[in-house]
Image (tube, rainbow, N blue to C red; front, top):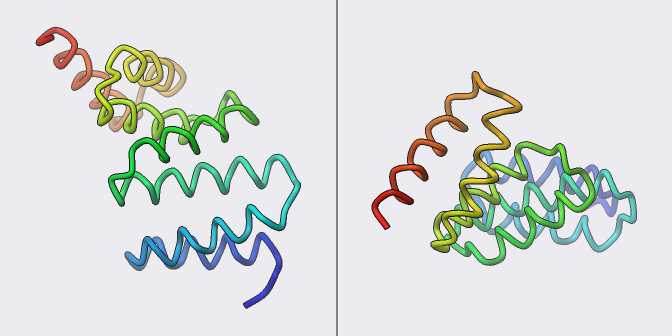
Length: 126
């Protein structure tokens, strides 16, 4: 296996697409250990957050999505993943704010709109 972070990221992406989430997680984690490029780190954290969501480890998903957002506040995929994790953690108000920002920036994105509606309904039921 190559020690190049972008190669490891691609391998991780292929594993993720094939449904091997644990192997994808391992590739992203290895890549994070060998790169100091901030933009690459943001992508790796965002991708790792997707793995943690699939594995239902919502605390780690939220933490990694936040790390990606620390590098790039405009990363809508990371913000959406954080909103999903926060929803599962029961932190609905925070999740709603993230989902709302995603929906405002990409109003035609159905996934963003669906999550925003879901969260709005959940918050009203509280």
